[in-house]
Length: 125
Image 1 (cartoon, rainbow, N blue to C red):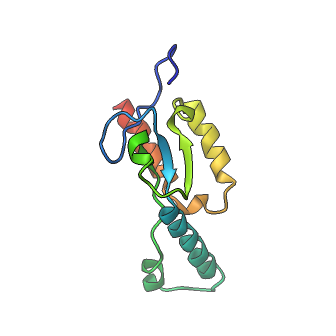
Image 2: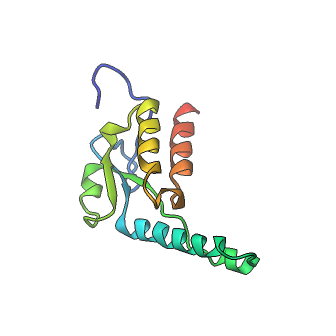
């Protein structure tokens, strides 16, 4: 953690709820596969002239991002997408990561926006 400036964002472990500055922001392999399935299913629907509410309801869930302290991150399978919390301590860092991730073909099928919104708004309240 940057010793000279307080972080803009407080990151807590999704498992133990402790501060997770030594940890990682993670889209596990399981969650990444969910987002890829959603992307594929959405693309199929996009090619149709029309689709039913039932077809929309059957779409897979978005892949869910989570923050983990180092201890709990090390317990996760070694797949998926990880980056260190220390690389996302400021609003500028988050904006940079959002741009970086937006180039991944599976990104739009994840909950990144909701994940970040909840994290940032929780810190402002």
